[in-house]
Image (cartoon, rainbow, N blue to C red):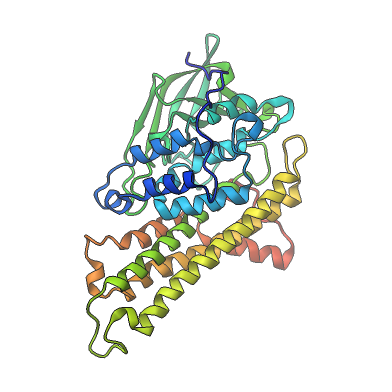
Length: 410
């Protein structure tokens, strides 16, 4: 049945932490060739394998479960750095870290332990949730069904936008049983009856494996299914459980701005020509170009500050947990902070991705330079849960006191 083994498999290198030589080396390995991979659509299997071997996916797992025990602030600071190195790799890991937050944090009766051990061993988990049958994005009814079969179940359905699953060892599947109960299934991606299709064709974030996943009578053991009404503080039985993954996207966007700032500075340094009417003969001495680079760098600073402030709000929500569930008010404050961060960071990133061409001139638009990747990737990530809805929710709360929507996208 290939059920999750209880054995702990994390006798390996220490998990890379912020500021450590190990994390710097890992980020350098991920960053190498990132632009070329984006331009030529070379899927980053090797880079994800570096993450797997380093056990970076266990950064947030409690220390006594074999993880790094990092705060959310450290996690999101790491995600910003990953986003700077390669935003595709960062987004591939988004659903994995979402799984860790939902399934690997301390829960009543130690129900989280088997999942924490899985992640501590280096395994990467993807997600298959979205279905196109829903009339609204984020709808909670699923056509994917879990049906009884022998001592366990079988799973049938088709999922779209399964980010990260192409590179993962396990996949988390949201479904309903024949009685309509909501359930989360966690099974290996190589299970018979599971098919992953690389059919994502977006103009940005091209390498995230955000394709379809098909389940055809895929066997599911009883201990691989977690029903919402029996989850004991695990899974999706928490208020504003989507705030984490929303802020994860915003962190990647903040990393993109940092990368754009570095590219803008490098572009000005190597420019040999400028306009006849420029205020300085040498582009590197041109105060207008210096200002443009400074503005992008300042946007990166502000974006990182916003993300980390929101991360601290989510940390406070985690600290308020009782029996696995956070205080509703603390969780709402975290959702508000994540929404505010998205509203401003998305705007800064899209503006910075365009601003970079002001420092490079027409030659910077060459396909070989691939500088448009910053705008394309930021624009693609920003379309996840549009900022206008977030801004409206924040404004409505300030005006009327009404909480932002209690859905997976807040």
